[in-house]
Image 1 (cartoon, rainbow, N blue to C red):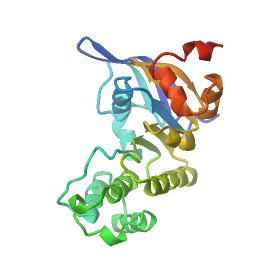
Image 2: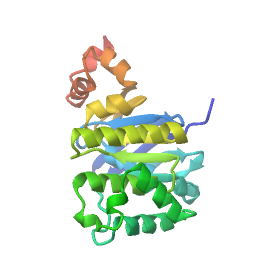
Image 3: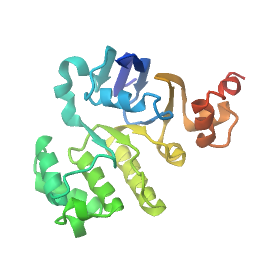
Image 4: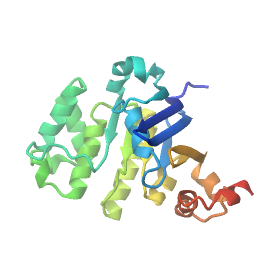
Length: 249
């Protein structure tokens, strides 16, 4: 069996008296999509921030592509990236300039060619030289996705990747993400409140509540286990802690 692309053991993080992540452990196989779900305050953002190396855990171990993030994270950071519509790129820079900045930060070789490929794949050509601040929400999302893919990452963290998009654009983004994962063998950690998106994209789901993982499984397995019709109903059960009896039955 292949080694996990992401392995988390005994992860813990507190902010003063508040325990945001409490003894979390999981592993993610390479080439898969894993959704990290939970209500507001469940610990998702803190967990993802620690996976990215932005927050140092109080305890536990994070391994990414076989590298210990606490000791050698700079060895693996070039093979990772992150996308969220809530993190804007510099408004005054054009799409092309933004991609050049991030491409240089990641040390991308033949950067102009890589930008040209992304522009064609993500349909950015018409606004490559338009300031980012002048773009529509859907266009900004596509540019953010291009930024996340500029270094052809092997591990990709996505936070609400289709938030505020119309159904057609959102479907287009999901299709591109699935195609990227299949063709590159990339591993994705997804945080989303869109349960239809979770059902479509995810191979496995980790359900969080109050800083702990309280259940996991494929979307189909969780729906069957909780006796529900959709992941949205499962999410409500877990978030409200009303589904424990159903899961145990």
